[in-house]
Image (cartoon, rainbow over all chains, first blue to last red; front, side, top):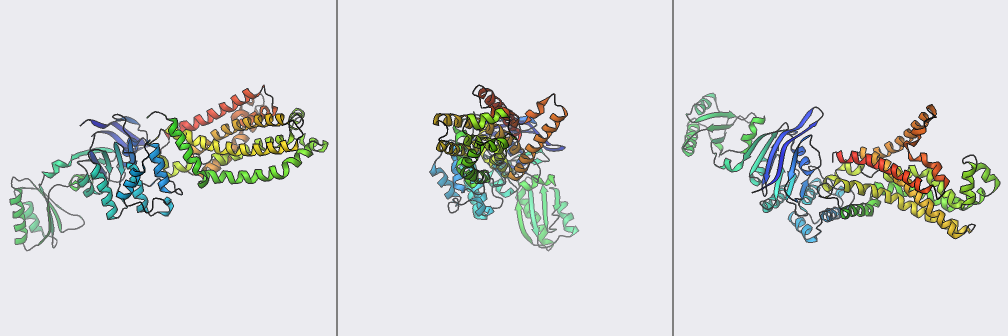
Length: 294
Length: 272
C-alpha cells in the first residue's frame, strides 16, 4: 500500500511548552490508526496540524495526490442559530459535491434525521456530537481525522459511529484519537502512543493477538503474601503486578511455551490456597502498552 | 487546493444570506436604518432649504471653508451634499458595526475548523471581507438612492447633474467603506468575540485619531501621522472635482490594501 500521509520531523511549541517533538509517521491508504495518550500528550495538536488548522514550527505533513480531508474536531463547531442541515449542505457544496442522498444516508446511519433541521443551540450535547462526526464524512474524503468521536455519545450512538468507521475501513483512511482503548482495539490495526509530545510507541495490534503471555485475574479477596510469593516464584513468571485501586486484581506476565498448561497451574495454585477466581483474561491489551506512561 | 472563485462566491452567498440571523447583520443594519430614516425623511429636504439661505450658509461656514461651501451647497444639490457630509462623518462608526464580526465569532466558536479542510484560508478571508463590504455598501447604496430621490424631487438642479453627483459620491463612499472595512478586518481577526471586536474597533479608531492629532500638533512640519487613518483624505473627498477622483480612489484603495493585507497576515497564521 502506498503512503497516503507522511509526517516528518514534526514539532510545535507553545512558548516554553513542547506540544509535539520530532514526530515521524507514515500512514498507508486504507489504514485505520488510533492515537492514544494522556491528556495534553499532543493528540489534538497532531490532528490539527494534519488538517491545516495549525502551522508546525518544524517538519512537514505531506498528503499524496489530491486528497480531501475530513475533520471531526473535539468540540462541536457549528454556528449556533442556523439549522444544522443548512450548514451541512453548505459544507457539502464547498467540497464540490452536493448530494441530498449522501447526507440523508449519513443521517439515517446516525439516526439524526429527527433534529438536523434545528439550530445547534436547541440540541443536546450528544445530538450535536453526532452531527459533528457526520460532517467529517461528507464529500467522501480520502482521509478522515476523528478527535474522540464517541466521547459523550450514548452507547447506541457510539455503536453507530463505530459501524460507520468499520464499514468504510479499507477504502477510507482514518486517524482516530480516543481514550477508549477497547474501541481502538476494535477499530484499528495500528495504534500510536503519544506522551508529552513525543511518539513513544507504534503498535501493530495484529502482533497482540499472538502475544498471550499475560494473565489477568480478579480474586474473591485480597491475596496474602504467601500466595503472591508462590505466584511470583513460578519458573515461567517474569512479572507480577497488583492493581493499585483494587487489591484483588493481579496481572501475571510470563514466558512459556505452553501457556494453557501454565494457566491451569495458576488456577490450581489459587484454588488450593482457598481463593476463588472471579475473572480471568489472557492476552495483551493496549492497557499493557500504556502502563509505562503512568 | 488552488484558490477558487466558485468557493469564495459560495462562502460569500451563504454568509450574506444568513447575516440577518447573525450579529454581523442585525448589529449593523438596525442602527444604520434607524439613523438614516429620520435624517432623510425629516431633515434632508428642510435642511437643504435652510442651507440655501444666508443664515444657513453663515452657520455652515463654521464647519467648512468658503470653497467647500460653494462646492457642496451651491454648485451641487444641497440635499445630496447634506447626505454626503453626514455619510462621511458617520461612516467610520457604521463600518465598525458592519465589520466587527467579519471573523471574530467564527474564530471564537471554531466554525472555520469545518471550513479549513474544504477551502483555502485566502477564500475564507476574502469572503469575510466581502460580506462586510457588501453589507455596508448595500446599505449605503439604498440610502444614496433615497437621498438622490429627495434631490430629484426638489427639482432645483438638472436631473443629469443630480444623477452624476449621486454617482460620484456613491463611488467615493464605496472607496471609503473599503478602506474602513479593511481597518475592521484587522480588528476582527485579532479578537475572538464580536464584543471585543466592537470595543477594539471603536476605541482603537478613536485612539489612532487622537494619537495622530497629538503627533501632528507636536510635529506640524510632518503631518504624516495624520495619514494613519483614511479620514485624512476628507479634504480631497470634499473637493468633488473629477480630476481629483482617480487620485482619491487610488489612495482609498491603498488604505484598503494595507489594512486588509495586514489582516490577512494575521489571519493566515491564526490558530483556527
